[in-house]
Image (cartoon, rainbow, N blue to C red; front, side):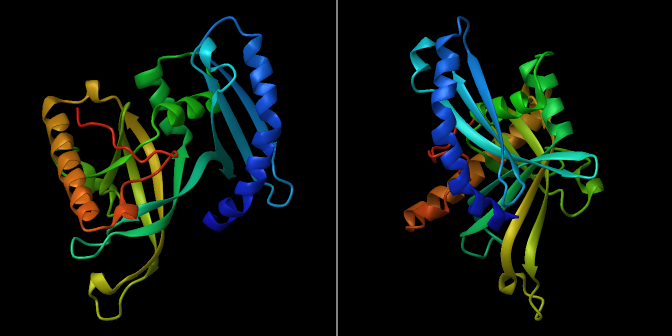
Length: 253
């Protein structure tokens, strides 16, 4: 899947180049802001469907709207929004952080909860909700789950040990690794090729308890300091997930 998204990327860019002027023309006719424009595109070679989301926050952004894209796939009746990226990954505390191909997949339930718990908009389509989420939350901070963050996290299995903090709140996720376990049983010797992060639900941190927010802040700080330590060691490309062209981290609340 990751390789397919990489192959599609130049074709998506060509589509953006073609539809950009249409978005600008649409914004010029708009009298109310913020405004957005959606272009849907299916790549014939892969049959993958992409949503290109343009956003103008005010009249000053009409000529230079912000833009992003994401892919929509179906598995049976389930719809997923997916994005591919390279992110820093540390397999164990003893391992160095490496850049790892990752697929971040978002369930329909996740976006429903994001809208209900943060946007509070009744008239948005699923693509509009997804576009606004990615626009508002270009950065992620991996947070290791523990009983202080979610007392029941162990009930959901071994793949439920990590969440993602974003500027708008907290994302609960499931993760899976593609690779091979070491024959000697030493995890530091495992071969890791790629990673899947499945976003299952969203929480507005204002709806969480004080103890949960404190625990998240603690994990956020420890993760940030670990990244900073690696930066000082010269591993500048290992810094946190890049969901946009910028790699700045958002502040701890």
